[in-house]
Image (tube, rainbow, N blue to C red):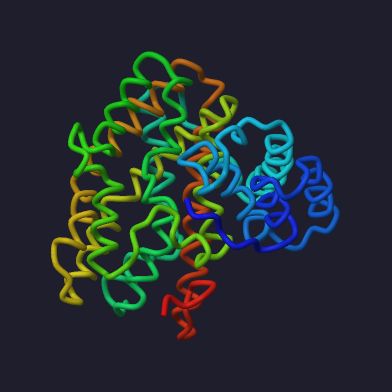
Length: 338
């Protein structure tokens, strides 16, 4: 990923550390300064969310010009852990654990997850795209989504070695489709890149990180946090279940909105693919993945449900930010594309 522009003293210190122009020990003081001077939501804190994005990227494809040895450097890991504590504490304060399943059978867990996602009353980005969006707003949508979609499925894949038996098999069935079922060109990340090119956008991995606000970075950062911590394996499974259960219908609306503006299959194929694929995935994720995991370990039920609720909340907060800007006739990005 291209090295982004710092958004404050913390991300500035981190990026100087990673490029050998600052002492790694300086990260601790920088994090302490952030903690000592809280300012609103950590999920909307540009400096914190960009720092986490860069730290997590060391576990994915890395940062341009940054040595891979930084992935496990103790000062970086310690600073990340301190920031994760802030973010997780806020998420747990703002997102309550939903009603638990009536029992621990796979069917009961799936039913509870479907009830949760069906009752979600968050703002509908997909309806706006289907009925009202202009081309510039479609471009902004893909810019926001590119932060995650160009590495689609990777945060959930961290949970593969943390699961066993039926839940692992179910997860691998979903992930196989996400990664193209053996065809590199059919990877969902590759299809999304094609859609970006169809709109005249740059599909370089991480190209638009500088353009998006903290709330856009917060959701993939939370996914990485869930996926990279074994103690949060229930949360990442619940997150994936909610992600799949709320995908099919919105992607149909996204595709319809793009066709309304005269865009062709090069742009719509990614969204059309998810209409059918995620209708299948939601059943696997709810019953065979999340349900079987809770059957194996009933103590994980609360985190499974909380991870699902966190997915809905994070998506809703992001959508509200974007729609508020569009309603006001403004760009939803930190800086315009043109």
